[in-house]
Image (cartoon, rainbow, N blue to C red; front, side):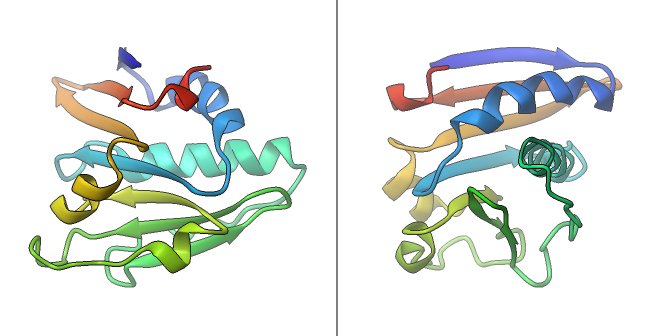
Length: 147
């Protein structure tokens, strides 16, 4: 599966997250790639708020976990962990098995080791900047991500 689109305003992210959020469940991984400032954390914020809204639940978005490395969000029907590996040495081995079982993982700046292990089952969201617009490319090798 692969999907590309151009976003000209942040409010247009609602379309993407409303299509994506019903597909999320435990034991799934979403990788987010893009240059600094491209909108990875903004996409995740919109996604989490969409999930909370569908569950009639308040959500306090904690921002990017660049320095803490992870933030946990426990919603009524789904637990999510937002990781950011920007400051982690790219050759570091990270084991996510304990996190994976009962959570959906949202990973910014995925390490090569993680992509090697999990990309066949994960969804990859690449965000690039062109002028003032964002080009969002969503892809996965796994058919479970098909809407």
